[in-house]
Image 1 (cartoon, rainbow, N blue to C red):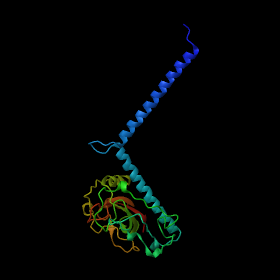
Image 2 (cartoon, rainbow, N blue to C red; image 1 turned 180 degrees about the horizontal axis):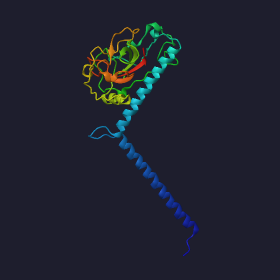
Image 3 (cartoon, rainbow, N blue to C red; image 1 turned 60 degrees about the vertical axis):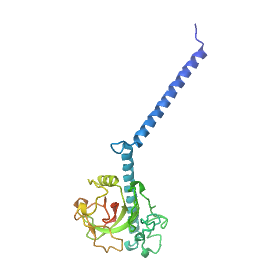
Image 4 (cartoon, rainbow, N blue to C red; image 1 turned 45 degrees about the vertical axis):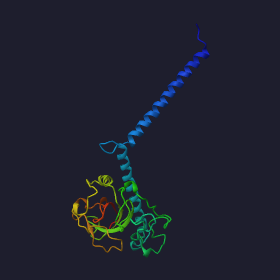
Length: 255
């Protein structure tokens, strides 16, 4: 019996539709499985998804700090005196919820050209909270920034410039796994935990960044923990007598 041409084409069209549906369903299933693998965890530790998130977080940290350093370079190139650099902002807070007054510099007088962050400077950097890099429990010492919040400071880091203190930015209360990964990106091998403090890495309790006040501090770092000699960006304890000691250190201006 001779098959009707219309009926033949109809069967071919139906078969094509079923094949297309099958391909779409397979693609959707593959995507769902992939997403499940990316975000799942198991009893043996973090999944690939968690590792990728940590890597993204570290990349975000480095990009933000580099942009902050570039802002300082631009201000210096424009002839702005270092003594006027003003890190004033309403984003970074102490554990009490108060603003970090150590970020404020009265010498700037509220001018836009010496302000680092927006909105105080139209071309300033937007301050970012790194809560995804921070310890989950909050800081309990009132005089210390909340975890994931930033502050400016000064300290002499061995091998970086002269023995004069360098201008540094600190992001406080970093999770140990983020801290160790950040160091790995800087060519450092560390296995820090929440209990790691300054004395345990060979430094003294005073090896902490002082408040920025015109490069007057005698505090120093990396004279005991020599692995950090010459490093301009790393993760290490930034306090010694409180919880959540680990912090990102980033040199904004070498002296």
